[in-house]
Length: 345
Image (cartoon, rainbow, N blue to C red; front, side, top):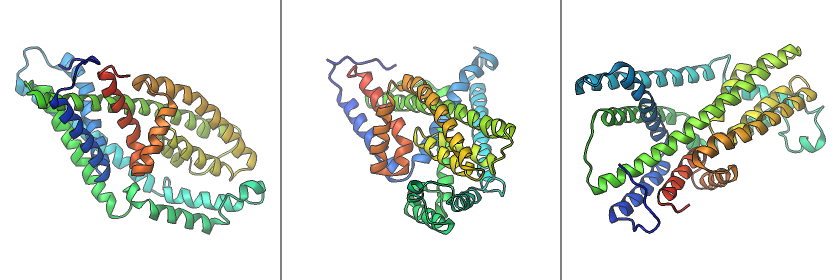
């Protein structure tokens, strides 16, 4: 069991070594491109941890043998990993299909921008590509520059997929081991276990809170695109793709909203400038509400303000690119948890 240290408690050599090793490991995860594997493993580990107590209460008795517990938790791990793989594969299949293709959406946005130049104000035209070809060229240049960060282009997609699968398997093995085994740890192992528990707790707080926010945001966006606009006689193209993108990018705090909002407003231009402005106003209202929701859900979970997360995300993006943006809230929550553990903040 971990005990909270007081400010007067001098950290032991084991704790200092564990902090140094943890910092090096987290740095290496970003440098070596292992963040997808880490996040996938933690997701499986936390999901199994959340479901296991329910399983123990309803299906495992006090007299259950160690072997029956191993089988029960092992089956749970298999089900969780399988469902995550199916969900990920289904999303990728949809985004690559004709009806949900991101490429088709980008091409449509480029065409909308070109067709809308006559109705847009001059100050906005100066900041837009000259035509659809320029839009596509700019997008292609951006993709080439950020290919290493996106890690989903060409050969990288296969490597990342393998890393994610291996990470999920490792997370499942660790969850299975912890659920059925109780061990006495020596000082250094105990210090490392404390770091891992704080980090996994930070992951759970940030990621599951952001999942709730992304789901709420996507629900409001879906209501607007599937109900509000059609009731007004307005039917936007590629609505399902925009809803899927809203959820996926919504998993990234703050930045994800900017991406999804930009896509929706540009596609709304295919109808008229007034519809685009209406969409922008709706999204601003929704995300003002979401700002307070974010502060309540994420902020209450890690006791951090939005400006703290933004600073952390900017610093991590400058150092590690797109991976830094994704990792920043989790890393920052972990650092605050370590400081809070010693009553330093």
